[in-house]
Image (tube, rainbow over all chains, first blue to last red; front, side, top):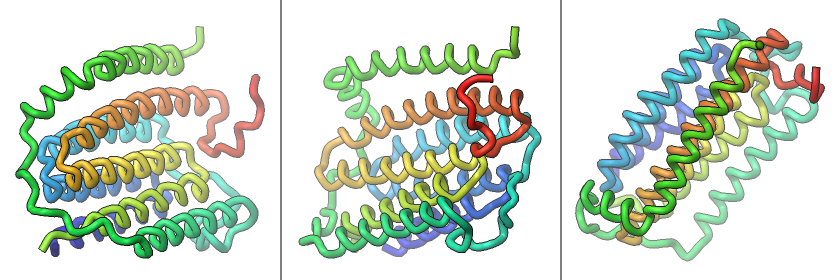
Length: 168
Length: 101
């Protein structure tokens, strides 16, 4: 119970700091901290394999890709006329509207979840899901989706190479 | 004492709203992509929490597919960002207003 609140607080605070930073490098590093906290939550939810994949794939591969691009572009600061230090809701036009929409979304979701009948306490559970059972399900019930995923990755790879190619 | 499913869902809702706020409020293409990653992770947390509550591994398997889509989206999105930066020397989405140049 305590661990849930610790990991949840770390995830929320790190995510808030991600969108509050002016320098994208700090944003990427804070997002890695947020992913670490989420990985802890997955362990609490008896999904150790997902927790490991979260660290290896998300924090290890995808975030390194982001960091690589941030350093490659070498454009750390936002170039806007607006003062970035001012509070987001105080700024003009669509930004303020978007900020209000996001706050409204959070309040609505929390209101809906806290007013429901309650989905009950999580029971003792069957223990951590084994990698074998996940793999068996992945290659039988979800075999088609798994194969389609490989096509998706191939298309994304070709698209990235074509898009980032230096002009002819 | 285990936290209830509602608490996981509320945490996920807060994270999703933070990601939404980032997309709306920030004016930097890379930070917007990072906000999308926050939203995808909030959804992953929901899937794993429901999978735990229902006692099946299906939720965890969907998380793998979401991660695959996130990786593909990050690769293509960052390639587009690099391509745009070469043309405009800017990461502000407001400076990309024409379909063709």
